Picture: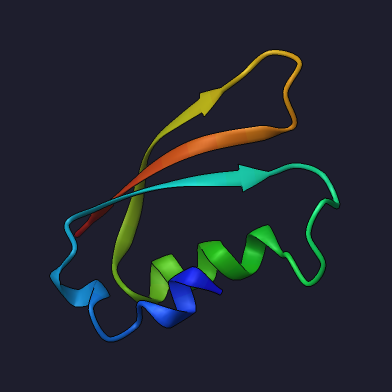
Length: 64
């Protein structure tokens, strides 16, 4: 929802760091929906950060 709300200003953003959940903590949460939004807005995945024993992953995207 935060990304959808940023659609007007995201054109001025060069990097985005986002946490991707690997659990069902949030309703209506789809990792694929986030990835599609970022791709449509010209962001490319640069790096994934995995955390042992945790159910999330941090990712850095760059505007291409």
